[in-house]
Image 1 (spheres, rainbow, N blue to C red):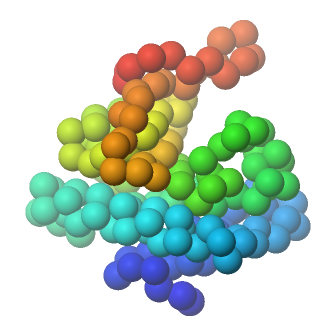
Image 2: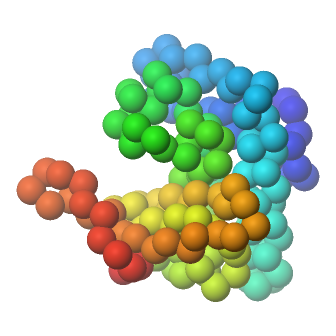
Length: 153
């Protein structure tokens, strides 16, 4: 295992259940390793802050981080997804609803996009610059189509 931070490994941030089940090898180009490192450091900071606020070790479950173009297509990701740049993660935290987690991130961490996805997980796009965009959204299904609505709910 290749540690990127105290609690996050390269393998963890490249893992995809969908990729594994479909036989897709999710290889990251060397040019994107600095972005993966930046994302790992962001996740580590979130984990540290959550632990301090909750006064307990607070692991973050990473459902998806980097996605190759093939994997992104297989999961139905956006064509210009930040996942393909290694600057996004879909996460969950035990003991917190996705809305609670998103609201905590909103108050505590810089981000470009923060999405409560179907009240199942939180998507966060990591700022690539020192000026985060701070866009808030909630993804819902309407008539079988994913719709992104402004705000967190």
